[in-house]
Figure 1 (tube, rainbow, N blue to C red):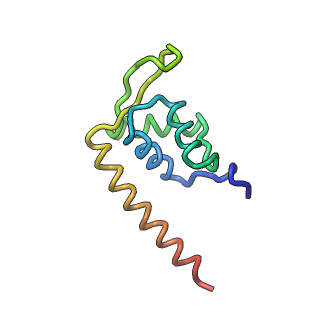
Figure 2: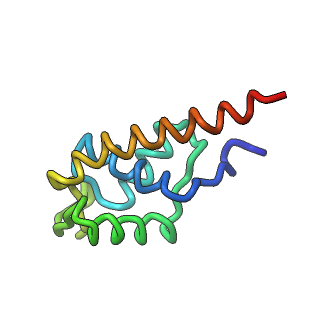
Length: 110
């Protein structure tokens, strides 16, 4: 499977978005580009997945959205972590690591 076709597992996108926003507030396109650049194009977040994830996180009180201007003077919604969102980054990262360890145990069985 080519790296650019790696599918995001359910639940992983929320964690990736939260972690991305832990660096600074960003608009949706900026979040997608940051993830793509950081993973050397292995993960490409499509709008059809990103915006539902952002709305889900906003409904959970983990991110807050405010209108602002992009570098190109275009209006865009900027998302930032709330206090609850900052806590959730650590909790969800720990949960994800446990999941990865469990899958690795299964993969090691010969």
